[in-house]
Image (cartoon, rainbow, N blue to C red; front, side, top):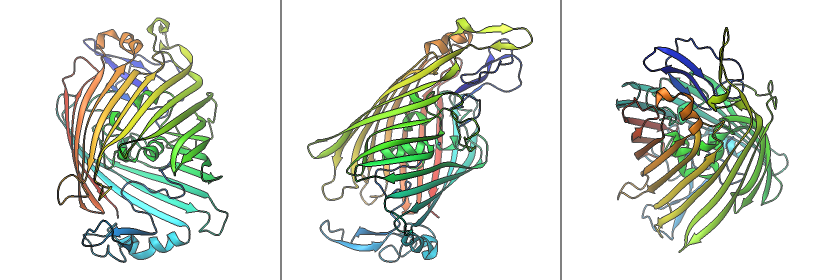
Length: 482
């Protein structure tokens, strides 16, 4: 993560503070003050798709590209009828089919039979800073996500291998830099970068060795990876939108948005139980990643997840740690110096780390319809404050699905987050009065049809800069499965 062009209040002078660049930074710039998230050690901005089950991996908002089951018209819990997930049986009309085009007019299910699954979704955002923040403005933008999945068995090859490519197209504008620093208001619009472009942010190859073990390598999308473990997070497409509610921000110094890596995963009943990943420290969301591969050391991420059941309601406890061996810009101001002709020169510090605990627990489940439920999720993390902008982070969220009578496809959520900013960052530029960030977010996601979802979202966030007023961010999000 980098903090660039932080304007010194009262002086009109900009001091560049970089969390990641090893180059001297200039004390003169016309760029307004903002904080960019998740830049690599080389200063480039920075995303694998995994889901809970192997080999079936599909993004949020989709059913499997094969024959699935659906309740009959009488909603009899003991009676199901086979139906085609792309609309050839009980999902036949425009209001009930799973995609607008009915599976590209039958092409998608036919390709899936041959081992090629194509999925796409278009998400549009209209968000505005109603009050407070850095700038009161409203912007429209969006993302077009495409997933191309190859299954080796259906392709006539060996069993257990899956290749998944995730391509993202970003268009329009966003209010990320206009709302609150250190708590981006739209996690999905961070990809592929803060500029409008198209890039392959994930290209992952996974080989199942048994029902319990799998190896994976390639370009891994961090947002997809976390969504694979916790699909209720929604990737910023169907759940919360603020990054602080979707990802554990304590890992931002040690885990780029997109990276080249490899690892071993252990599964328990099709869900991630434990694993170890070794990966490059550079963000490769918009590049191949090979030019600077391991030029700044290697990163390691390990996790272990304990699955529990209380009164028939499932849950899990995950312990996750990450470590980076490379060199990063130190936030300790005692080492910073002003060099004539070079500007502000920041010292380097080796290694960075983070520790995280993640809790999820079902609070209520309809015994007749498992899709109707209420769940709790909370993330707590610690990080190396000498290199990370965060010392600790925490959030807690309650989400419900199908709670409104007659609106079984709808979901809603309310959450609170607190980002404890690094003490070294606070002391780095004391004139700015940098403080901790906290906020709440509420959303209601209405399933207009299975292929069209409309979300109303409200965020109230206490900003990092003491001179800013509390930001109120209101937004609408529309997700379409074409």
